[in-house]
Length: 76
Image (cartoon, rainbow, N blue to C red; front, side, top):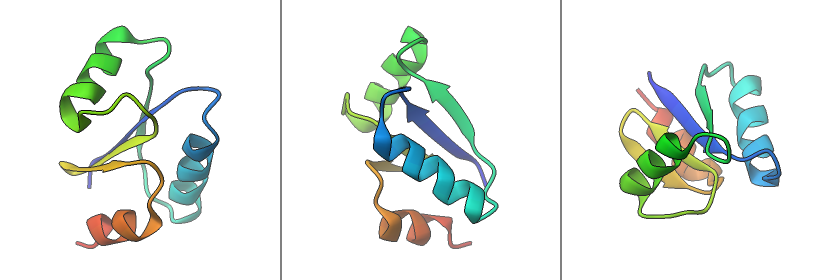
């Protein structure tokens, strides 16, 4: 399962999301959109949002840390 999380260093919910994935042993790829303009543009194209975190679970886009939506998207 491909999980991508778009973050910024100052985002508290980004840290919560990353901690959640770690405790659930879900591998993810993180992109810091504060340092990577191309990934920031990609995030906006996918989500229509500029806020973080934006989480992509195998094509399912979740804006913010929504545990229920994440768990639903992670079900195989």
